[in-house]
Image (cartoon, rainbow, N blue to C red; front, top):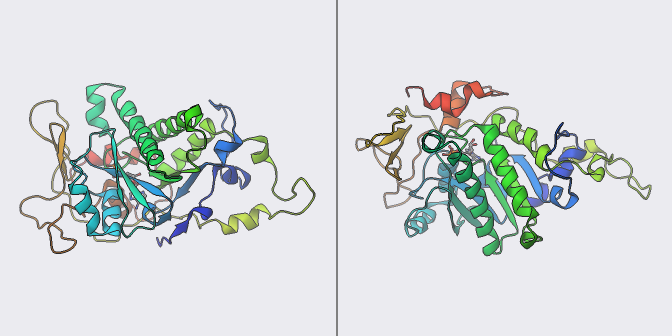
Length: 339
Ligand code: ADP
C-alpha cells in the first residue's frame, strides 16, 4: 500500500466522519456529545510516519533504541540521528513517555511511550495492563502540552507485538483522552488529537469505540448538502472524495520477513521472558538481534534498530489479502505460535 504525506488539514475529524457516515451512532454512548471535542478528535488509518502533525506517538520499548513494528518504521524514516538522541535518554519505564526531535519525519517531534506487554502485565494483576496503557496516553498528552504541541497523532499502543486486544486498547485510549479533554485545565491546549490505526482490526475497534465516548452532536447529524443560510455546501460525496483513500487491505511490509528465532515464553520464574524477538529480563528488554545475526547499521555506527517483522507484518504476509481480521487472529494467538 502506498502512503503519501498527509497534512493535518486532510486528516478527518470525528465530526466529519459522522457527516460522511463513516462513523455510526453508538447504541449506548457513555459520554455527552461535544462539538468542540468532535472537532478535535480524529481517526485515520495510515502510516503514522507520513503524518504532517506537530508530534506523533511511537510504541517504543524500554530501551528506546528501536524495535519492530511502528517503532522500526519511525526509526527507519527518521534516520540515524534519532537513535543517537535516544541513547542519551536512559530508556523509559512502561507507562511513561519521552520526547525527541523528529529528524527526517514530516512531524516536529516524536513522543516515545512504552506500552504494557499484555500477557506479562495481566499475570501481575488483572487491572495492570489497562492502567499502564492509560498512563501511556496521559503522559504523552502531558508531554505534548508541556512542549507546546498543538496536534498529536497516536499509534495504537501495545496492539501489535505486545498483544493488547484491540477493542480493550481502543476503549482505554479513547476514554483516557476524553478524561483529559474534560479537565478544565486542559481546555484549548490541544487542537487536534488523532488516533492513527494501521490494521483493519484496530481501525474497526476505533470505529466501534469512538461513538461511545465522542457521540455525534446535532450538527454532526445534519446533512452537508444545505447549509443553514440556504447556500449550497459541498455534498458528502464531494467531501468524501477529498479524504485520503481508505486502504483496501492490511499493510504489507516493505521488506522480506525473516523467520522469528525465538518463541514467546510467559513465565513467572526468574528466567528471561521472550516475545518474538524481544527479550524481557526483569524489567528491561533487550531489543533485537541474536549473537549470530548481524546488527543493522543506519550509518557508520552499529545501532540497535530491529528490522524483524512485527506480528502485524507477519499477519499481512500470512494472509495477503485480509480485509477483516477478527480476534481469532489477534496478536496473542499469533504470539503463542512457534515462529
Ligand atoms: P507494540 O509493541 O506496542 O504492540 P507495535 O509496533 O508492534 O507495538 O504495534 C503497535 C501498533 O502500531 C499496531 O496497531 C500496529 O498495527 C501499528 N503500526 C505498525 N506500523 C505502523 C505504521 N507505520 N504506522 C502506524 N501504525 C503502525
